[in-house]
Image (cartoon, rainbow, N blue to C red):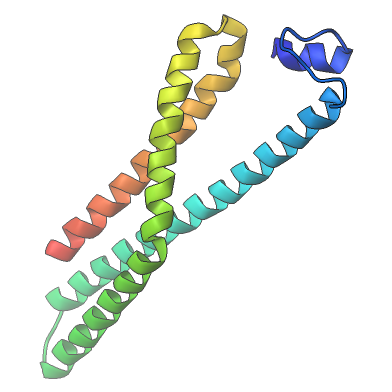
Length: 156
């Protein structure tokens, strides 16, 4: 937080700066790129979690249909629904295999970096780091929970 106040007040920075670089423009550029990438990551993570929850819902509905089945046509309908769900899951796995892995690897890297910075910064810097750390942990937890719910529902 002190760095932002120093930059906005025009105070000298403790780091070496080049004369041809306007530090305020560079700072605003970094903030803009940081917000943009955060927004894109949040959108991607929300979409992935929503799709995983949709798969869990479809599997629960299929389980209920199998329990309430009365005749051959119901069985045929359930098998068709199961094939559709499996096709959807395969498409989602193909679509998200690289992205979700990148989110997990980036999340673990960010958690480790954040934890090392929490050790080094003063208490005023914790106001930014702790919510960020909680957001990363909740993203990883949400995806792991949804994945285990899909695995559990598929095994029933």
